[in-house]
Length: 383
Image (tube, rainbow, N blue to C red):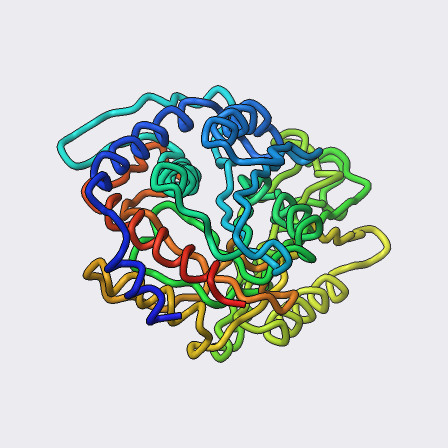
């Protein structure tokens, strides 16, 4: 695939690339202005569908998860195609202040880098191919997925992949601010909601009774005392603790939300087993615990030598960037876990993802688009 990347770079017309980059930046801003909290992406999905139709993609549809699909037919319709995807949802609530601020080469705005510029990059790819009258070697499916963030548990990609897996052979996933990085491994993620219940009572009159809050706090202390294995890299995080009724009430209910991650399913399973063992040690008749699995992101990896990985690195090299191989938790986890080649790449650089002061850099967008175009066309040529 590396030679195809070089070949396309030498033969394609790049004269309008800077103009396209500016259009993609404005497209990202227009998209960012439409609230899209996880599970509530329909307004942004409607906008993306209209843009897919404007780029003359066919079979433009939205499913029950608000995933949006569009197809660019290739020369070899009998071959499995390529899936190019980016997620539309954000971590911000519907009433978040989405004001944009421009400062020189930077544009600030919550959700702009993660992942409005990623979805805009997907649209930029479709725009370039239409304007240049390019028919790819095989079908390219463009998909704007949902439910990637937080408790979405990659639900959009899971549904999209189930729908398209018989029609595709490779996946390119876009995370807006990941330019220069090639994610070839999806780490395993398990999320638990652990709740404690007790009879409760008055803090003075019933002192000594079991408290759900005390139970959860003690469990939390035991969890943070766990030392997970370093190889494979394995981590945990207690993201939220909740519960209790008032300051002078022995709590009847409390809970914590726990995020467990590992580069390998075995490391994840070992860590989860340790957590569950601590729960069992703390449980007694007057203090009960329950564990609900609220997230399960599968793991997968492709070899460094795989043509898709090498093609992604070659595409970066063509725009003067030395690529860095990464592992992470993205929509690409889903096809990777099913044994499909998949990489995650970026469109630009930026910082402060998931914060109100998130920002992107505008100068790298042209290079990011060129990289995406090269990789997508090269991947679409491979049988």
